[in-house]
Image (cartoon, rainbow, N blue to C red; front, side, top):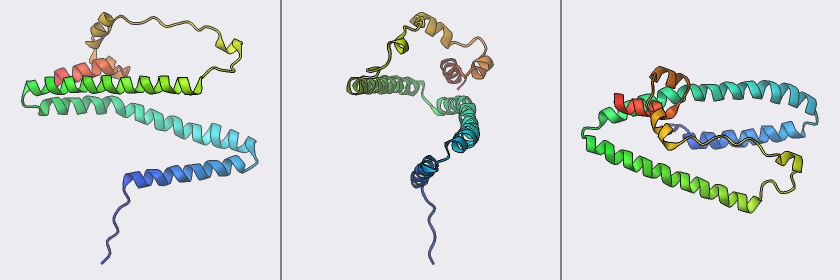
Length: 164
């Protein structure tokens, strides 16, 4: 008896990436840019892509909310929550530092903006930085449902931890 083992997710993702590259290459070499641009890329791919992104955004808030409530309520000792919170903040700071370092390294290597026209380099209006005290105030939601509707993650996280 031979039992067929199911294909694991990473193999499926790799196959989908290869097939996507092949289909993209075929479309690129098809020689009919009007058809592929208008119908396929601006039509089908844009609609499917926008729906997919909307579905992902729709899932983020409930997933974070329920996951945090379940996680916090499963902790038996409040001291563990403090330890886990400290480790989470530490991990966040480390990953942010790595991301900033990689971005700076990429900017030094690739030198973005070199060769761009001066018209494109017109100074944009700089957004005002929110003070840290205001971030702390905004962390406590006036209306948790409104925070969820607006996908404001920090108030959702704060409310979930309090509720859990």
